[in-house]
Image (tube, rainbow, N blue to C red):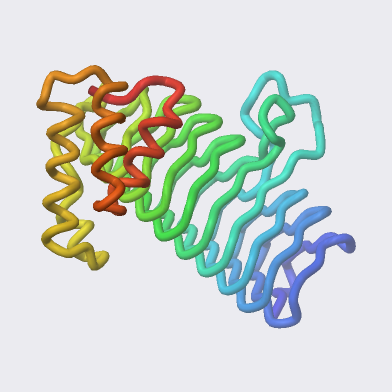
Length: 256
């Protein structure tokens, strides 16, 4: 299961059924779970933990040093969950001690070619990042987010669950849950209604989220006033809770 030309550190912990292709390098302090397949010419450095049933394509760079001038060889970490697809030439860096020392990806993410996920990013589960998506350091991406090709996020931005970032768009402020964003800097264009339909949200839930969008962006309210209104609605419309949470947790201000 490990090609004769692959180089695997003696300190790496590799499940028995892991496949490692030609000329790949698995460094010290790397753990790789059962069912994971690593193609040729992949480099994985540690400390890095990769879960089960992942597929990492050729020429990816996983768990290398963060691209941060303050980095001074501290033993920071990268964790990757289960069933992720990471395509060609992706780069995913470890964390830095200026944050929590951890970059983390959840489960079932589809990471297309040339995506860069920088140090200290937190990516949830079931996301899609199209080719050349770029996350700067400390970016948090919620579950079910879709990022179009060549899109990007500024350092420390948070992108809420179920949001959609359009192709070539760049965000420099936080994106609330459910929002659809386009252009640079990002401009809200409505909610990701098509994505919500695909995930089983019913007509009433989608209507409630659309009405919440109007409260935030169309009713002329201050953000604090909009949050107070949506908190009241969330009592009978629980789908609004993650929207309210994403608004309340914003530290950079939201796209408006």
